[in-house]
Length: 358
Image (tube, rainbow, N blue to C red):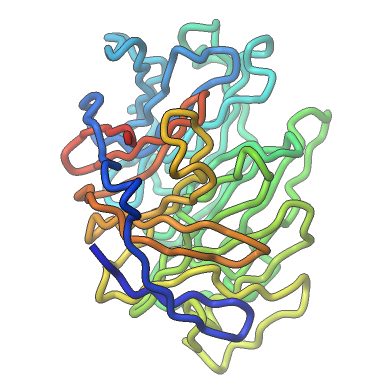
């Protein structure tokens, strides 16, 4: 299987084709379990035997030893408006979860507004009465809610939000610093009065982003508008980044009347693909597991509509050997990582959770 993908380094576009090497032909997906509308999966520090799977309707289920625990770890279905781009969208466990039992969720409430809330657990199940709201965003549309939560290499909680919805950024949030739309921000959860800090802006809908657990670099799958999907990249230690929406859609001018703000540094996409190959990018992870040595250090991402999955490797801040993988996941909602760095994919449509195998 072969694919031509346009890669953008600064202002230059480079066309790269790639296919799986002979050594990697056996790469495939293994079905692990079935859930109701799975939309994210992750592990908790100190619990290597468990995988937590987020269901869009408002539950978090626990997969352990190949079996799904009957009782949910977390259930706020009565608080969540779900469907389309709405729902319980992700969970992140504090780095000290083994002792603090703190975890964080992003969801859209019954009015469709975004909430980021801290909870605690008893080590087995969530304590719903422990809820502490960290962020509330009044939204004006049902789409482009972002929703990813991740802890970065600095121990901060990172949160992503889209431009608020509609089409073409009607509120001009992409190149605005006044509101919490079209941004990735971070929060120091270990201080008494934490304040959200800007990390990146100019993002249309950073549905899924992740940190390379080996390098600390940030990878962002930013969903495009009419023609282009993009993967963005930010090295560890970089300052504030501007990824250009809505002046740019990927590396292409979308609205020339929008001025690209000069706060921080403008970054073109690491990789992009046209809507002939899909319609909504699903960002993933750099593989850092131990079971498939041949793909160590490759970043995997895919497309919700086509189900296609690609991988690439970054060297010197540039993408190399972009490759279409020999499998698809229809309704690809997310990727996930367990405590050992093994990679998972899932389908919000079929409910299946898969593990990458070699």
